[in-house]
Image 1 (tube, rainbow, N blue to C red):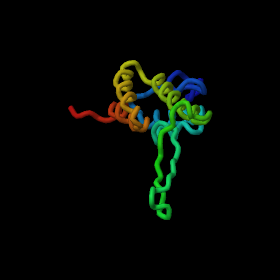
Image 2: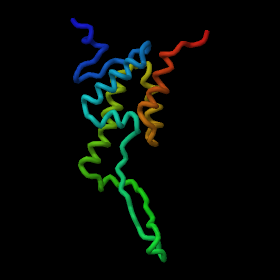
Image 3: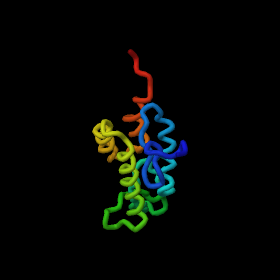
Image 4: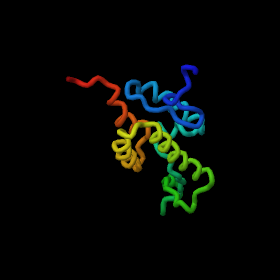
Length: 140
C-alpha cells in the first residue's frame, strides 16, 4: 500500500479525514479534493456561499442626465437559471464533504458554525474557527 492511500487520505470519491494534529495539511488536501469535484468549489470556500443576484439600473426621477441608481437584488428561487442552481448546490456539496471528513466529536460545533454561516460567512473561515484551534498548542 502506498503512503498516499488509506482511509485517512481519502480517495477520488471520499474526502480526506480531518487530522487534528495537521490542520494546514488537511486543509490543503481537502481544498484539492473539493476542486477535483468542481472547479468553482474552492471559490465557495474562500468567498462564501453563492447567492444568485441581478443588477437593477434605474434612472433617478427628475434627473435623467445624472448617474442612474444601481442596485443588486437577490433573485427569487423561481428566477434562478440552471447555473444559479448548480452554484448554490456546490455549497451544499462542500458542506456535506466537510461533515463526512470530520470525527463525530466535531459535528456539533461544526453544525453550529455552519448554521451561522447562512448569513454568508465563508466556509474556510468557519472551518478555521472550529477545527484549527485543535492544531495549536494549548497553555497548561
